[in-house]
Image 1 (cartoon, rainbow, N blue to C red):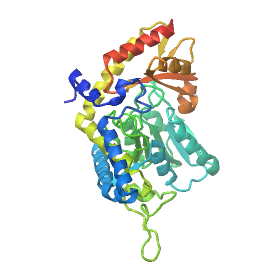
Image 2 (image 1 turned 90 degrees about the vertical axis):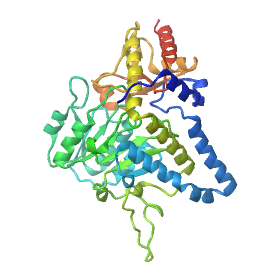
Image 3 (image 1 turned 180 degrees about the vertical axis):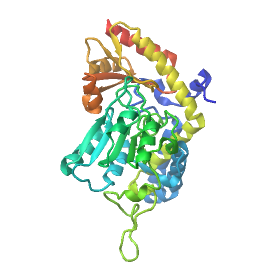
Length: 398
């Protein structure tokens, strides 16, 4: 049974996290603070490269890549052959999207209004060339994507349903499994951007019903920047032809013909950083040891406390929507732009994030928002850190 973490457990993990000694970090949704063991795993491999030679050290450390793949599969309730290790969320999502192949005029892509701006840019470039369309699925009264409204939009021209599970501009959590049931029933490809969800929410890709799910290592997982996970459902893989391959993803046979890999590693490159894979493997193991259910419970408790206390501050508007909410807490301070709030807090040693329209354009525009300040918590976040953040914002709000 899941439960929030004890103060003693949090203190022990913070003692093994160097960054907490130099920053009050509320930008875990941008990139979290790695543990000392994750840093040591990266550094140890870099030292092996320096002493043995990078290629020789790489051969010796391949087992860490497979360890990361196996742990990622366990995290998502997938098979290891369904996991590719990528350089980040956008790289994985974009590679899978490009692999869908040619599009035809009139074909439709349906997205929730919370779709990540980087994904929209990728889809729009293609849609403009092919004459396809991108359409927004209505949201319900809580702000979440509405599964019933989605079903009413479907016809035989819909080729892809794309969902950003946890939007970048606030704490809303979309009903990913309900969307998956509709996608499966109609045989439509379903892609999930889980950049903020991986490591923060329990994820079962079978239950969710997605064909592709992309995640980042640097956020809730506390892995190194430059790492990501890409899940591709095994039965869906034959429908994806990578836009480019190399000697790892499609080695040549004796006749010189490329043999495309029959697992998700067809989306990997021989130029991957094995040092970062070592760090990712350690971060995955740490998260699984803590328990994602426990992580979720701890983050939810801290984020709810922060929301309630922020909402009580004069001049502060909490902007989160949804029914179930994540560890991203969005707000604005009256009379101040979000970037100024961010910079002023940074001068006090407090790190938060800030987003503009380009990050989530459909949602921000529909809600009349031009910017948001974002304080995102981790299971490492303490009550004392929340108090420090609130004191800083209270001063600004005056």
